[in-house]
Length: 407
Image (cartoon, rainbow, N blue to C red; front, side):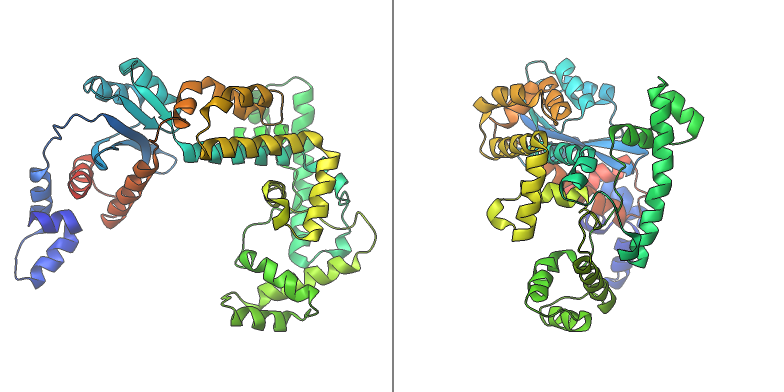
């Protein structure tokens, strides 16, 4: 009964038990799971700690994993620093704590276990570096458009969907101008939010120059097939239906309409002979082109990257710093961190460097220690599976019993 309850929960275990001629109610299964859950008496030495969502954006808990035994040892009902600090104080034998760059967890560990080594999660370090460089690209979009000759747009060359996006961009520009004028007059962000009714996040994006994209393009089913499409197009096949059939033969599952719209855009772009009438790529694609190796770029992309780097040397320097940081994390080069921070302080990714400097000890440990928070993230995925299996209605004691027993 307990094993069925641990594996399936209440109602699914009851349905299976009925087929096994075991007439037990779902509540009995859940009671057997709760009753079998005992406190973990082992003393962990190396733990990973991360938050998980009871309800995304509203309420969070904390998961703690023993990284040496690869087991979940406890779930906490919230992610308040005081709760985490009390849990850590009761376990003074902990020597290493792997965590993300959440300041609340770092402060709790410092107060409860001042001698413990804190290790920042390496995946989050790389993700934060990529986000910092993407932010630098977004802030540089007006200059990038001038550099690649896409400063203005000819509406007659746009598709119907792109024309709608362009009209929305013009409306956004009015809001952007209003917010900037209020900021130039010396109004604080809180005052601008109250006066305009816009969200605080949106006002910050406008003032940072992160809301200047004409075309906010999302990834589509066609994105992985773009190199193949460009190869077929340059080879002479410029019919949308024929391109779609060739992609289908190669395993493409998208619709004919998607390929046809791509062919239409290509055709119109080739007709736009005068400079300054096309559209620039979105910031995410530009950031990707800048960070790719030059031998992986086609000729047109390489020319575009060369123009951008020649016109914006500060952005090229930020790209070089991002590449060096990625190499430093992947090859565990702790000795290069201090010099890198000194160089990055005056660059376009200076806010990211300041954040690393404020958490220098944990970042340096991430480049030195073998521990990271990867398996903690995996246990959180398991927790999400259990929550969905119980339709998100499990209490903390039932979640803890099932997760600790199954791990």
